[in-house]
Structures are given as structure tokens and as C-alpha cells.
Length: 227
Image 1 (spheres, rainbow, N blue to C red):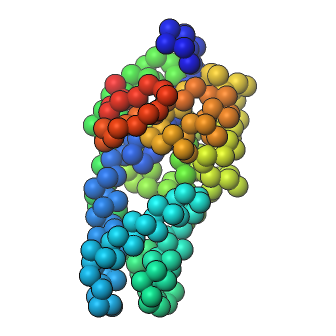
Image 2: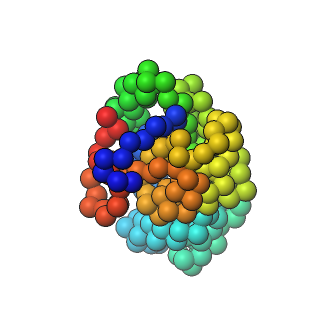
């Protein structure tokens, strides 16, 4: 997009975690809870287990695998231990319960969404699954923001493919009954999943918001708040 190019947008779509929801503390807290739980059944330190959890998390997300059951089975494998399905399910519940305790809505979200709505724009969410059908949508509902959006697409639940595949984005366009992606702006937090193969492939304008002020070369405009 050229610096002075005018955009005649009709809708703005957002990613969820790290864009609308501040989940940095939630993610770290959930990791530590699992590391502590696993340390109780091994003679390994929590610090070592935590490093393994982070490595597995990075790998799983890179291949589009969001099912924490798969994650924790891989963590156990890397640690050289065996855990049964009941234990895996218990860890998954502990992980998401811990996550929910610490996740928070960024303070600029409600004012920004209200202003966009006042300007006549449709609003939506395009986000990846949490790995369990219905869980991400339940989180959005329980976080109290679902009512603000005209469309919510959970990639991997509502579509075959997860981001960065363009399918979730084109699905949102279909629900909004918008013919062209150039009527829509998408705001996410990761270039790899939110820009080239996803929103832009669907013809949308795309921007990155750097909530935690990491140093990133986005190629698009973005900063630490939505306002």
C-alpha cells in the first residue's frame, strides 16, 4: 500500500490473541503450570521442562498444529517419559484454565471498536483454532467481546485450513457478502500467519500491530495500540 493511498474500507477484521487479547502473561503462566505438573512426576527441573515446552510450542505452531494434547505428548517424548491419555487430558484442562485466569482485553480495544462501528464499518475476527472444536469461540464469548463482531471465523473449526491459508479470510468475505477483499482491512500480530499467504492472498489490505513492542520488519504500518 502506498503511503498516501486512500482505502475505501467497508470492514475491519482482527486476529484474536496478542491483537485483541493480551495473552502474554496467560501464555507464560500456562507454560509454568504445565512445567510444574510435569516436574512432580519426573526428577527433571521446571526450568528444563519449560525450555522443552517452549521448543515444542514453537514447532507445533510452525506446522499449524494447535491441539495441546499433541503438544504435551511431544513434550513427554522429548523428556523421555510416558504419560497416559487421562494425564494428557488433565494437563490440557490445567493449561486452558490457567490461560483464562491471566488473559486480558487490551484497554484500547473497546474504544477503537466502538469508533470503527460509529464510522459505519463492519467488524470481524479471523483467528486460528485452539485445537479443540468450539474452545476458541467459547473463549471469545466468555471474554465478553463476541457481541461486538459481525463475523467470527475460527480457522480449523469453521474451515478446513488454518491461517496462513487464505480460506479463513475468504470465508469471512462470504459471510460479510463482500465481493472483493480490497473492501477489507485485516489487523494481526504475525507476518507469517496474517499477511502474505492469508489476508493479502485473499485480496485484503493487511497490517501488523506490535503489541509488545518487539523489533519487527513488517513492511506495513503498525504499532503498540489500535487507536
